[in-house]
Image (cartoon, rainbow, N blue to C red; front, side):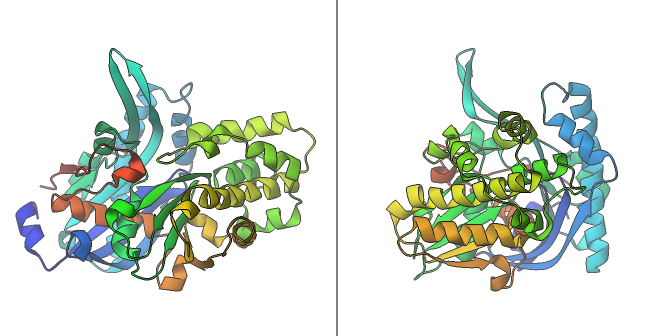
Length: 400
């Protein structure tokens, strides 16, 4: 279907949300049934799959993260190649879920971020913030025959925002509670929080990146000879000792002292940062390194709650999602840090405790954001991104 007005008239819509995150492990694809729009939105996850990248593609994506290796010819080629892979992931999801592409009403694709510069750079009299996501939407629409909405971050940046975080609006729609103050903590490559005071209006929502999530942990596990790409079940960190003196020095990074709204990414805490730590602190046992940077993630989250959330009110529940929610060592560290830094420690939950999937959360979120775009409704939260106003996100590519 290519008639946007007819889609808006349907009782519910089948939407596929697509996402490749900062870890670039593969493509998350979620089939979501969405009813209503705005504050009447209801979303039900019907099926989810993580579609791994073919051998060698993840390494090519990582080349794009660094200016010295992310050349224009590589960006041009990978943009279209990832479009093919995102389309393939959507079609594979349809096959697994037992639906035909013709039954899908909309695809909402975040794409793959390869560079993000949220801080303004003044040039030619203009204050420029910029971001680049690849995974060509025209290829997705052509291969699937489905209307595709993409490039969600750029309009917020054009309105003076940092283009992130965008999930807080969906957190507000799906998780606000009349009596409980909730912190929705995502721990992906980067960790970010959405704070929803009890009975919150949209204007009361606060959200920002707390700092590194799994990004530094993954980089050191990969580099230090464990033969893994991540710390499975937190076993390596559990076997190590936190080097407290190094931890405190790492917590001196200026990002942690910046007040929200703020975002960060691979440019601050990526592989180059991780490798620089090994040079700055030689002689640390590999297990101790993993334990220390795991503690860094937990401690930076807890301190951001102390500094930026607690002054706004109580925190009754913390709901953790993302890959880090499957790391019991990290969650134990987080619980300990919250007990140290907050006068009344909140209850700590995983998203699965609410019948939802941590793995699927962000893909579901972009499906919901795509639905908002369909209805011409804004999808950003200015107090989270720093934008001057609420704006409709995304660009629409017809499927016919």
